[in-house]
Image (cartoon, rainbow, N blue to C red):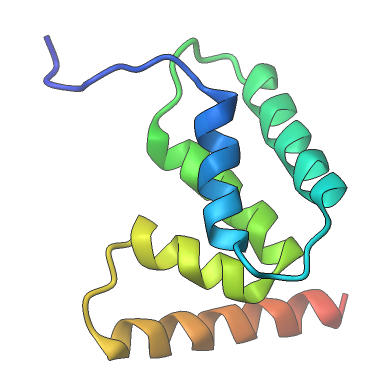
Length: 105
């Protein structure tokens, strides 16, 4: 054994974690569902039979970044286990840089 815990994929768990990040944010349910569909399509297209939660988390963060910056930061704070205010400051700077690059495309 490799010491890893394996759990079956759960769309409900994915939806719940994204809904928690999006709580009280102005994002329509259909946009959330489209994001979930994109994540699941991406997962199905992969050759690997097993996909790490780290990889799923990256996909979720990418979709949340497009939907709502605050939701992205909420999710990232848990995903990266932020423990200090400086962690948020750095994340905000990185997010600002990414959004600026995307805007200039």
